[in-house]
Amino acid sequence: MQIKRMIEEFSAVCYAVYSKAARRGPRRVVLYYHSVRPENTASFTRQMEYLADRCQVVRACQILSAPLTGKKPLVALTFDDAFVSVWEQAVPVLERLGLTASIFVPVGLLGFQPKWGLIERTEDQSERVMSPEDLKRLQRKGFDLYSHTMSHPFLTRLDRPQIRYELEQSRRVLEELLGVPVDAVSYPHGDYNRTVLEEAEQAGYKWGFTIEPRTVFGQTNPLAIGRFSVSPSEGLFSFRLKVLGAYQVCWGLQKLKKRILGKRCIDE
Image: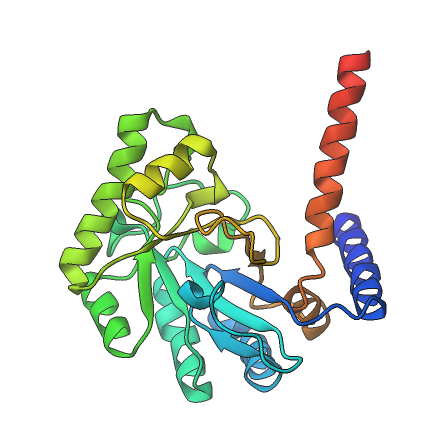
């Protein structure tokens, strides 16, 4: 795993150097977190201070429309799963720095511990999803709250009626709770396909967020907006590369690898 991270970071550095040499302008980037543990608050604070100083931070729903001014990247902050640790650790930091963020809520699990698999994030297994009262307090503080479906499933493993229920019901329940339109969804596990996108559009969502590390362009499908995964414990060097969108080269290399291996299998 460490070797993989080193390769990804090296690739991102090369991409950043190339982009600078090519004089490419500032990027539109969406970052996403899950939990923010107490022991990671200091490093998370440094990341947020960097954003406040070096970037234009906008709401997730504005990432496609907000104008780029100067040389600062346009960045949207998002948090999947609406964990209590985000309320306890992240929100005070964001408020102090005047930053906004969007939280995606698994609506059917409010107040409970996650019931989906957290194999890759064992530290989150002790987490709890925020309560309805927590969400209302967040809303009063100016944070955007969006859907993360009802039960956090792999949507592509469901049939259409089940997908429709997860998307429509979560939106309806959250709108009744908050009293405002809920126009965005984050696909659990980053799992989506054409059917999921069609159902998201039918459910009334204007924006959908994936976990594919891609910067946002004018031609980006608003229902398939890429995001860069960030750990609150990671250092500023890799964090800055993600803010620059440099890690999207890793996604491109993964796609190329799959294409080559797929072709090889066919040839063999």
